[in-house]
Length: 151
Image 1 (cartoon, rainbow, N blue to C red):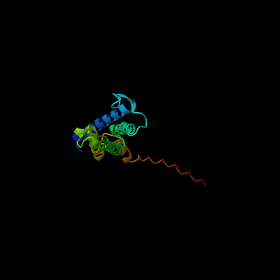
Image 2: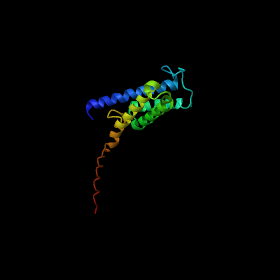
Image 3: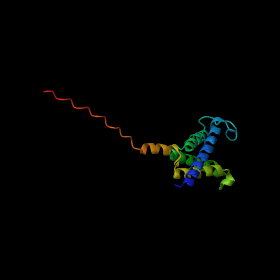
Image 4: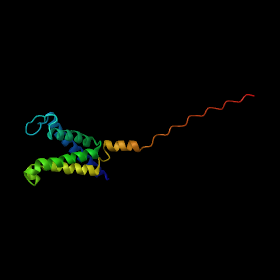
């Protein structure tokens, strides 16, 4: 991958991960304006809101730091597809009609991240480089001098 493409992929992954994680944090913890429409935290265990917020927070954080990026991005993409088709699509066919623009954009953005991978500036790449590097070979211990035979 070329250097400009590496930079853009890195920035794209960071921004999408950060936005998704903060969206989840708002719903989980009632910060940054909280969840819509209450402005507070979603009650723990509520389906699907709390579970969606948990996926957003965890997967967004993983994508942000580039750890387990592909599985996290696939889960995030699937959760946004679910959100679009179950929550938004019944209100209209097109995202502009049903308020599902963010869900559709997140879905396709995470699918792209899953396809491209985390890139070279990620924990995934760092761990891959570490596991691929050969173990250092220890120097052999000096042999002891043979004991002189006495006759």
